[in-house]
Image (cartoon, rainbow, N blue to C red; front, side, top):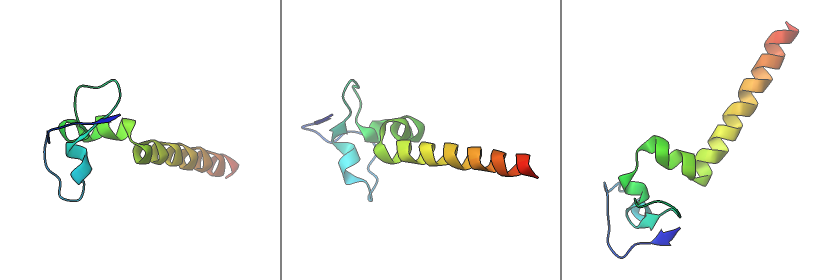
Length: 66
């Protein structure tokens, strides 16, 4: 991604860089995106989805054994 020259979007005090970070291939900064859209692109969002898939798979295995 790139760093914009102007702050754009909704200011979230704990996420100041969202105002100036524009992911590659997008015209919006993270602060201009919905939470779902941002999470689909961010490393934390991707890690959370992988963890969720792992836990769901493990739960299916555990319930299938019982």
